[in-house]
Image (cartoon, rainbow, N blue to C red; front, side, top):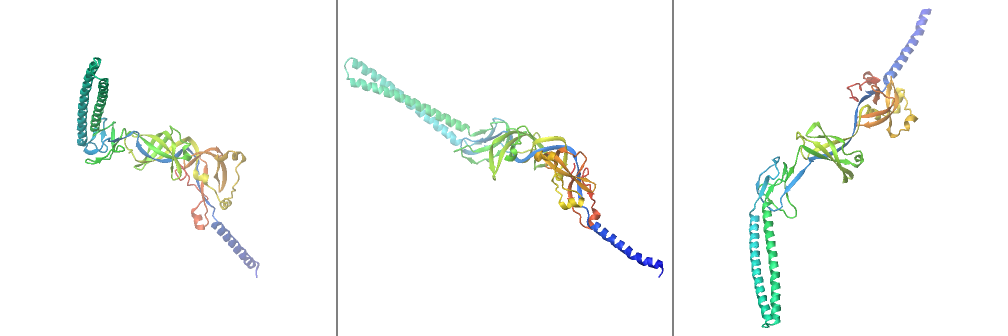
Length: 416
């Protein structure tokens, strides 16, 4: 065997071992993919911290118009949404029964006057008899008992006259009351406003016994409205009078309405074992889009930070697993002692450095639910932070995944 043939036979096993090693290494590298990271930019923008609640819209001034007398509705002169003026007739009740009561009261007054006149005649007769008895007694022509009887009759007649006059006054008051009740059959508007509710129809009988039944509900001015929002006790300490409010209604889902807190009621209410406090929000309604009774989803702006350095909340909530950190060659690290003394405002985010990660402690401020203000730390605008880490374990997935997936570029998820 020649030296050349011997060399070829010895080199073949070496090449085959090299190829096998490369195949094993490639297979292992191909199957164990690095975890893919989703990142987002650190930006500047306004952060508005709000307190959310729900409430009901109503007119600022609402008047319930009722009736003080019972009767049948004879005429109904206004309807829903009608604009009315103060003193305008809204409805009339059938006056026949009350008219009869007025006539009866007049008859009682006439009888009382007649009785009073009869008693005055009796009083005059008693005076005459007393004068006669006095003259006869002075001449000694009558007994002393007759003079005493005449005096008694005069005093009794005077008392009866006073009683008769009182009955006349009572009868006159009864007449006046009957006349007032008769005028109450005409229902008029106490204010300038609009009819937002009508609770009766023509021909319906209303009974005013213990309380006055409500016939109409008038709103004084629908261009000014208010929202009665119920805030949880955990949030009420943040809300003060004068704070700006934004809210939405289902009727206009793409439109945002604004208002201002004018009152925070002190009396709490327990609903489903949750204490809530009524907060009154003043709202302008010049175009009359808002209607009484609408449900408003309210957000009270309790704090605002303009052009704050901010990160997505997803970046603050990210907690990489030990396996992910090991695959990326990173360590969990610890919070520096200088930052640890700042209390609950201290958090941390993860910043990509090449194919690995770096933990960055930060001091956080306001949050609006999507972004959180960064008040201290090593982050600056246009830095990237990691918002999600997904493990890629298959060769097929490695073909479509990059170690750094820049889906958080401007306009992408996690940025504005």
